[in-house]
Image 1 (cartoon, helix red, strand yellow):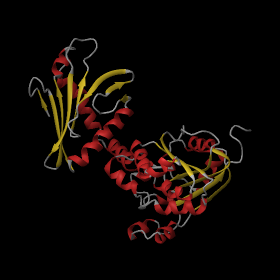
Image 2: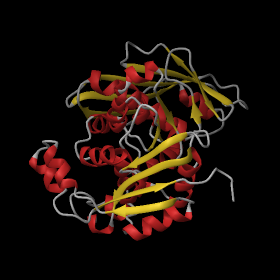
Image 3: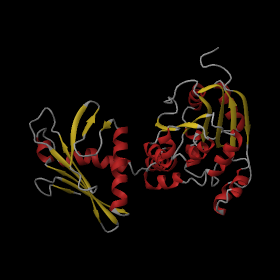
Image 4: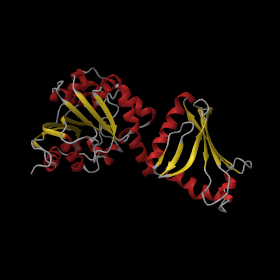
Length: 368
């Protein structure tokens, strides 16, 4: 990092990243867009696009250089007459594979317009944010989100395109549900759409919902043909406020995601609302006996909500479901029958780590 390197470049950061520019650039740019949206900053990182915080425009994207960089013109503070500054983001071949360079150009004049210095900004804003991101709790949360709770990035795309550790639970669900072309399915926490792909082979129609924009894009891409046919729609959404009409679906599935929901009853009530009378619910999740095993290692175990079968059943009844049944299935049988590698089969040896809940919605939404 260089402060005051020249009149036009008061601030520069360079980072060496493993992997080629062609691999890293699109993922980093898209991930940046997703993260900015979480911070209430909207706008695409594409030529001519405007970045907006709330309803206030503050930057305009200019001519990225063939996918290897971005140039963002930052509007000056509205209460000064300082000239615009420029944020340059460049991807170039480097020692580790990719060198990411971030430069603020012509920003000194902007800061002088409000009597500030780059050193003040770096010490008060940039460095604390960097160090906060390196604390154990934030690294843990980032790791949890990136790999499982809200998957994103290259590793997540590769893992959720073919989630081998989820195939046994998918096979169990399909065995129990016996889907037909007349079914309309909703999957809550659909990840990369692998279960949807198998379920749609029955001829049913489906909606997938996930709160990870990366997974929504992957689910749409992996199921492009059924999306085109109009049999599948995938939405980004919150489990406690599903983007789905009431009394619409004959089947609701939640596979390997329920343990992440902060308010399980609110989530179940939304699933209940989305189902039509007579609709079926099927949830696969983990019990406390999975804690510390390969199925639920740390930090996943301590950051997840693991339920005893009776606890899970009571949550479903509280949300309005009837004919609630729970079982602790033998997923090792499915792992073996699917021909999965030995290290995957080993995760499912023995019973007691997984619970399957099935239930019915037997009343109209809103009826007493």
